[in-house]
Image 1 (cartoon, rainbow, N blue to C red):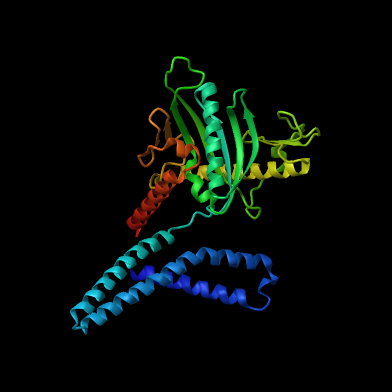
Image 2: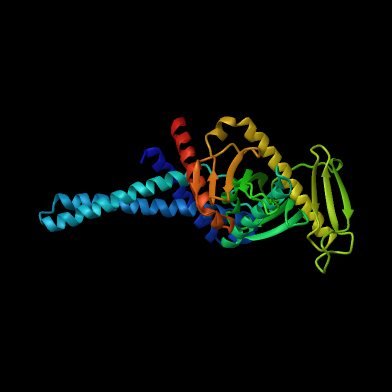
Length: 363
């Protein structure tokens, strides 16, 4: 391990110790905001500190084994020491690689909740059916990970498809795993409405945005937004309000329209609509920055462009292909039922490898 990397790790260990002392000091919790910030920072440092502690332990085991081998004459004991040295050497190599990954610049949005938008693309009714399948795929995945899903707005078709759906996924680390899902998803299958048995190709577009914290300033002048109050719509029943509680916000400069009707009161729908608008505008600003950082985007997985075709779901062959990392798996049913880790884990690994390579080039 390079000396500069060791120095950085030791500084992080010292920072962790400083935080522990500050948290244990009398009256530490009096300033609740500062206390929570310290707790969050320590939680982020914990994996690095724990891994580096284990690294130092294995490095000491190596030194001890080498030292003992020098003075050992018993062949059997020497062989045991060689095995111990080999095990510790292997562990040191693995832990060093893990530390390199842990030291990569952290996406500040990784721990945030996620706002999804799915829109049916080319393919008419079949595209809407596919959009509904993709929506259910993410719901199943969220359930597997213990995350909560709240559907905000949906425009359905008569036979179970979705022209458009907005929903949030709330859970620890949701954005860190789901941020790779933005882009065009393509399906190849025989539609239920196809009598000739021909395979059709349809698409839907997925947008993934981090939910924005209240402490992030997004300046939205009141005159830039038109708000309309309407009656909630739906398929009837007790779940649909009969009062004017639905809120529609139109951001005039960008044309973004936000509609919220899932809450029972106008006030709650208004708060949710404004939160969604803030996230949309934040995401728009992020997209502009991505466009200005084209070289960095090319060094990572995909471009982050919503028009980029990222994945194909081929039903006749039970095949799913991620075009960004040229990965193909033959377990389409499992994927559609929410087993997305088989695709997301390799994407994270590829992203980390690209960043490590970039870091090596700029060092």
